[in-house]
Image 1 (tube, one colour):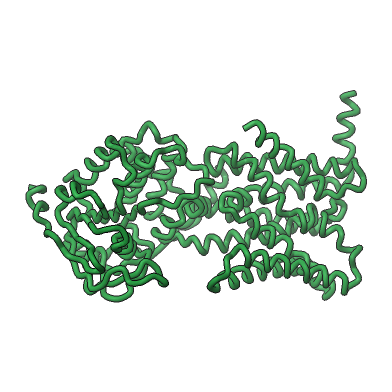
Image 2: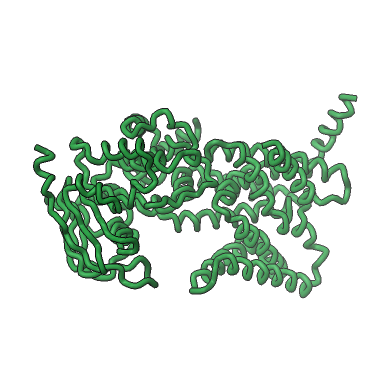
Length: 271
Length: 251
């Protein structure tokens, strides 16, 4: 019986695509969870959803025009962030509704582009995630992005922590909270672009929000909360990949999200 | 360990240019100053002219809505003056000045961020460091400040579990760690119980602390202890009495 169990665990590891996906979800999950701790405490979940959804038209346009998909996704996400800042900067427009407008406009644009390109079939993996689609080039890019995200979070930890907790004091001593917010938005765009192959544009927010919302209930400091979030993301990501491997037809995105959500509800009930 | 070693290599970039203007014994000076709480609101006070010498404890009195908070925010650099001149420690109020501390009446903290009291007080050292620098070496100063404000046994408590008075003392401890020369306090006694109040008063009026205090207050009993009283009334500012007690208190 234990041998059968071990077989279940080790059999997929002999497949190259599964190994690549495993490394990818660990990198994406951990960096997204650390970044997500700020998203959760600063209540930026909605804008992160807008950024991840806006990746879709970027990728589709890049595919139709023959550019790099990642560049297209990143440009679209940054345009969305700029659009939200522009709309909400005008009088009488709340940021909340600005995000709602940009999210639906970008997503509608993506759907329109997909139908114009008659390319529905090619893009379902981008919507829901597909573990088989992670190639070596993707892995390299995911590693680079995760490294950048973690490096910036580490370098600006004390400023980000202070500006999240007490924005006015950060402003008083000159630690520019508005610049820090822009930095976070760019990092969210980068991390979203990296995760899209694994969990899909529709579910990438889950990687930012669910493990961090679990970790924040257990940590006594922001750094502790981040460690817990990273742990939950890693465990949820790995079990999600196995689930998607063994139950054929379940896309990796949905499986990973369900596995990340289980500890969230458990912590919610127990604590 | 590895990441700490890496970040030791990064240069500490200060948040702002060094702020070492000489102040010639005058901590705050304003001439024909007028200001509004925000760009949309009406002018709260105008033609305010006053001086506060270094080391002077000043009370700022006036009814609700008379502009006390606005004046303090102008001095802190958080709200721009509508017209007139104002200097604090020899230069115009602006953000990024490590020599000035401002305590809002109700601090707008994000209660979702888990934070211990010790860490809150430690953030006072940031003003003297800057981007990319760790501030762990401020520990001795942090302990001393916590002790002076009677918070040592609360150091590892979550900030969000503290009472209003304990939090207010924590913020004063942060200002001490920051080494602020001018304390701008917006009704700090509003949330304090008797024991907290005694600790804060002993701290503020201790002659060994040579900082300048500008404090908004409603309590007429407070005014006995201050060197100087400024009153905001009907959009005008009047100096009630100058630093009378100042000289003999230091004698």
